Image (cartoon, rainbow, N blue to C red; front, side, top):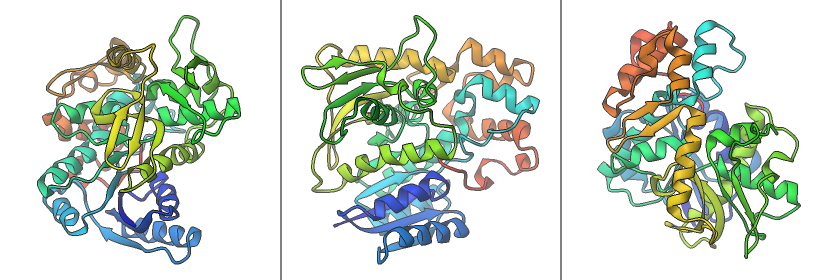
Length: 369
């Protein structure tokens, strides 16, 4: 029986915590986050779904690396799940002001500082504490994973995104994704439209979806089920895609063939075989790893990412830079890892001016990505 430590029990994190508490291989769920109110609410939600479950809350500001390392060293989880970001990916839903419109049009890459800052702090703490347990990251993993990999800090796997495409393909084909082999190579930028049933323009690449072995291409499947709406509807699909992955990462778990974002820090999403801390690629024979990485790197432009350099610097696409040019051209400049706090403050200056002067370290805990 295993202990799972979940950081960030707000929004989708709270939903995921309840599902994890119900897993047969989990003996205890430890919830960690800044907000004691969220910790209490998430704990109650877990107990309502799984009466008698062992669920504890630990107040923690994950941006404080030394303190986080102390908590990790004390808890020694078997699986670590990262769900906290400085701001939610849904933070701008419903906003039509000039600032929100420009930054939304630029793609999620411009808001990457909100998404990568806390996973970076966590992985530094993991290294400091000497934790070897697998880490599953929910925060924009298709892009944060490869950025962290340049620092030698890649989480084991990401959660959601390409796994959500897998579930939609299974639904469209009437298949059981745990029993029937479905493999998807795809990126977060494609998931966002595919989950809404929005097909790409003619000539634009779709995620590559393979059924069975020998594999049969069925790239239209993720677009066929009923449209999901950004927000809580996406969150439920995220949880459904993430829970089997977390279960497969538990010590002694049964093997699972699934599709996950950023295995070992690769950009985008890929089919893998999971069993405990072991993650191996599971690509169909007609595509090499190099080809899959190249496809995902190109698809990242849909999120506004032109390139991730070997030092972790993220270059924005021309479209992303043009979207924010009139608002503030600095938002579209290359993003270096060492500049994350300043870029968070700049984003807050435009999007959340009331909180901007306090800086990134004092941000309230955000919703998951």
